[in-house]
Image 1: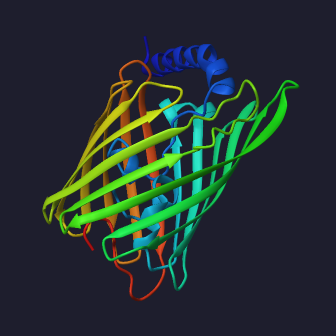
Image 2 (image 1 turned 90 degrees about the horizontal axis):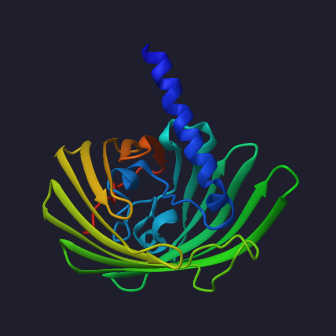
Amino acid sequence: MGFEQGLNINKSCKLFLFALLFPFIAFSNEPEKFPGARSTGLSNSTIALTDPWSVFNNQAGLGWQRNYWAGVYHENRYFLNELSYSSLGGCIPVKTGTFGVGVTHFGYNQFSQSRFGLSYGMMLTKTISAGIGINYHTVRIAQGYGSSGAITAEAGIIYQPLDKIAIGAHVFNPTRSSLGSDQNLSTSFGIGLAYRPAETVLLLVQGDDNTLTSPVVRTGIEYSPIKKLCFRAGMSSNPMSLSFGLGWRTKSISFDLAFSYHRVLGYTPYISLSYTFGSNTKIQDKPEQ
């Protein structure tokens, strides 16, 4: 059997699995999505982090951002175009805090989900930040099913009791909004810990729970042998999956690449690119400032 033929069979199997899962994706819940290849390289254990991708992952992290920022992200889940997911985010600092905007799109011409979000984060004290966000979700299903929309809210907090430790918490959709009687949006809550035992090492652990699935435990590690380069790895449960990645950062540009592995469906690639504006740019990618 040739290599190309093997790839076609593998893709056919994944399409078959997707067809079986489609009713659950379309009518039960949004598939798990966390923008930012840094996040995915760490198995999405990022609630306690304060990088600009907090605009999607925990709005409290926006309180630490004092520069204009823009980032784009794309994933091709299990190498299937039908499961592609993209996002565009931005940070806009003001005198009292920072606003965040985020747009995401998942799916293809037969089924798609989009999300438009506006958020705000600020420092309450020198060690505590808080943030809130509001989102408008739309889902469109072809073949005469039409489309629908819903509004959700989310909020988070990050506390840094010590220079090397940060604790974060985040809640999504506490009002239990839905896209219709058969199209639920999960209500979720997560709490995470970030610990930096050395300047070059960051350790993360996080627990998430929501109303539609069982709890998930996530762990991640980031190692920076030099200032501009990071290597990452992570693991999450339910279902068990592994992730790994790397990041390259300059004063203004950040490039991140990651892969995750599911024992049944295989690999998923992730990529993100972001730019920080301003001459006083400072990479705020660790729990301590």
